[in-house]
Image (cartoon, rainbow, N blue to C red; front, top):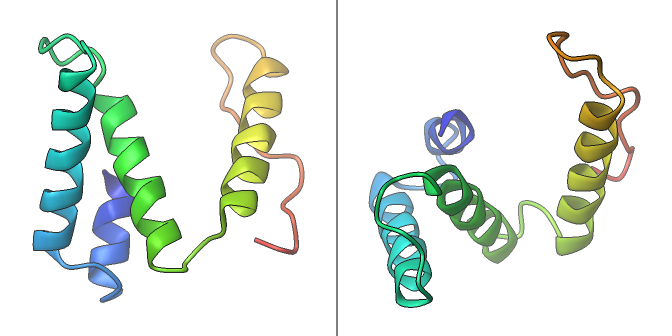
Length: 93
């Protein structure tokens, strides 16, 4: 949610666009059998955000995949209770 707020504050996304994208993502997931109990809300936020930044050309699909891979590697190698930190950032991002 903080990323969507930052993108809105930068003027790259309107609150109406964000609301519409998040609502559409939640509706899509529920139509596919997602539980309505809120346990997957973070997944919907991330999916809507990824879709918007791709549609707006802010990041490519490849850049999102690289960043996801970097974060997954970072949290898999971080001891429990320690902050997750990316070791390096790709220059293409």
